Image (tube, rainbow, N blue to C red):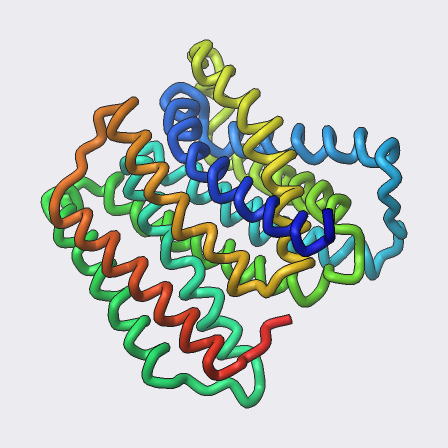
Length: 301
């Protein structure tokens, strides 16, 4: 299989797997402290990859210039991105968190325009941004009664912050780590991000709640370490280094649909007409922004 075909296979894999992670995370943090859970999950996944990679023929140059960008990217993508979203699903439905994350491709394109000289916004991009903001408006409208709950409102705000950090980290990783092995990149980013969330857990009071962890939380942790983090994040880094970043970001088209369906089927999370409209508007916005970005031929490589 060619490198490009392998990259497309990796993209399909993360589209499917990361759609399930919202459900498993929601199940896990019901009894597992969020930052501690995220830290253990990602440190274990990073160590697992680092242990396996020397036997696969992959090579990595252990220099400061190769390690430091991965550490910084890991802190943004895994530490703050995944860590904050993990924390958020303690207080908001997993499907809602996934819908908020549909803005990720839009944020990636907007950040690339803001940080790249000569990048200009065309009508299609502006229309897509308007659709995306309208979709977010409907999400808030459908949850207005819940925003009076400080924990629910904080969960939504933190999910947005995690989405922004993941988007910025993705761009940084794409531009600063493309010259090094993508699987080692994934391992180092998982490890550094996991360490950051473990540090955050020391200040969040997480450790005082470890005695009440339920078996289903442990099972979710194992799945997320092996499949959701180790395998899927390695696939993400491989796709990121072989395909345009705007294309890779389209995994966010599929993830929310899977997450919403699983949340409804397994956890009885509600699906309303307004939520469906918000989903359609947000996806339309993501499509238009990426289409406009391609029309302008703005490179984020």
